Image (cartoon, rainbow, N blue to C red; front, side):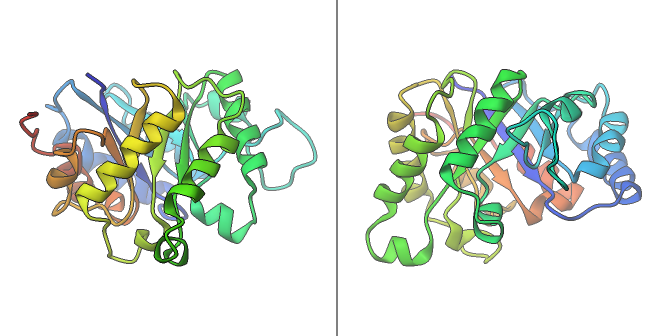
Length: 246
């Protein structure tokens, strides 16, 4: 059975001081987490050392919110895989809809990021998803298939997480129906070509929706935004109620 991965993306939130407070509250709340799941948190780069230090031994893995395709060079504001590895980071988010939108990241660039992450032993969390216009135009499957096809060229499908994040559900309070999210996650698994690949759902995930989402057989975890900033809320998500598989 695939292990569930509960990941939180803090985006541009949390100072080091706020990170210390979060860790102090969060740590005891996940002390008895079932061993069929793992927790990953992607803090801002400045908070990575603080979070690593204060969650050491708690079984939480740390992710970078992005990673460059080069190991060093004249890339102002970027972060490299060796820089992340120096602090014990294990995962890297690539292809999130916000860099795609605000910084015009292409599928080709995202692919280079994922490949370089794997070269250094990082597990890429590849985000894919459609806009509201694309969904209403019945282009959801075409768009995501293209993102998978181009984003995963020469990427090892056995060391990978894919996160389905419908853009129209990120930060809007709208959640894709669990059954539809399950259908898309199943398609993604087939397109990746690895039955064992972890496929997450992301898009306004919160404590009220997590149990229903995790009851779906094709959903192997979640990528959480706003609800991951509250340690109590995120702990409830990590401690979702295990559904009975049919």
